[in-house]
Image (cartoon, rainbow, N blue to C red; front, side):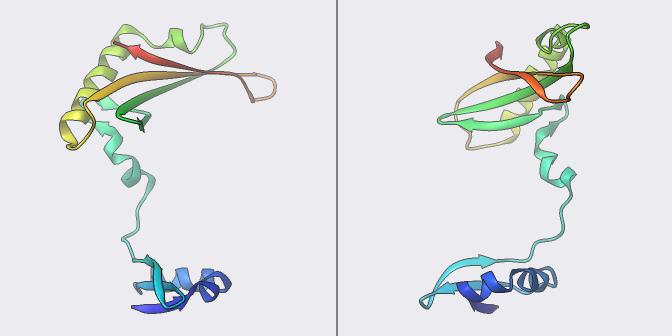
Length: 143
């Protein structure tokens, strides 16, 4: 394990990260005490990071924790509302799939709080500028 002081780590961060990528574990110290360790990890892809969000029943856009509650979040966006609002795009079938996916997730992860809910985030996007014109969070959207 290589040991470097905080000031050295700040000054040579790129080189330090290159060492970590090459497999070197680095301890960062301040006043002789280790304040952080950088441990080499196998490369990951976005699919690796988001793998826990997929279950046999489907996918969940986001899983968050709010105090003692697990929140499953479905994000829906629409450019213009000529074909309905983001909320209207969530069908009864989609709601059932979200519920089944949330239950699968809860069943496959231990040590989670008992309380949970499914929220929707509705995003309307301005067709001319591409910027959101409305973002609304709807708590307990699937009961």
